[in-house]
Image 1 (cartoon, rainbow, N blue to C red):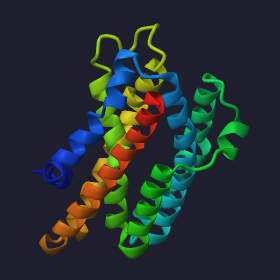
Image 2 (image 1 turned 180 degrees about the horizontal axis):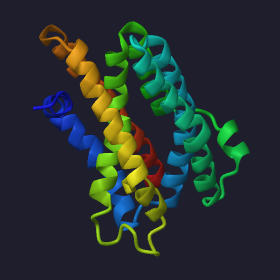
Image 3 (image 1 turned 90 degrees about the horizontal axis):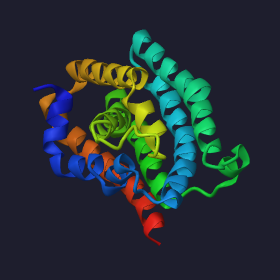
Image 4 (image 1 turned 135 degrees about the vertical axis):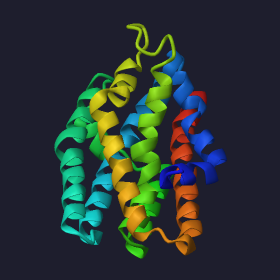
Length: 222
């Protein structure tokens, strides 16, 4: 069993709560309240800013030049590609760059991003990448599940663009590369004595990701 599969197995309850959250299911069938998705989009923009900081920290924490290059490429992808795509997606929902930049950060967004940065500051690059894995790899798994829903990509589904983006080949490749790098780091640094600590990090990061969905879900139900 691969390192990532061991993490998922140990955190099976948390992983299921995150990857099968009602928010994601409602995107697949198109029933998600628009207010819920707008709130999520705004907070996800703020999240991407902090995500970029995590990749900048990964450059500093990288033990080898190849690891530095991998982290630098991730940082560039967030700042130069993903954030622009996110702004365009938000524009389709009536959200301007000003709306995004002036929005107050939600507690749930701060909780997850601060946890990731703290894991990276206290630990090594492997600790940081374990904390990031639920987001980077999890979104690919979620989208792969959602795209199989018969309503997922229908023209009448307002969430089809989001699903298609994360289910598409470019993002799936990003996630696959992130997983391969995580396995490489684990081969080098994940001793049996550390595994329980890394599992605890993964569990908490996954729980905080589920809280991010729950944040939007509550808005849609209010």
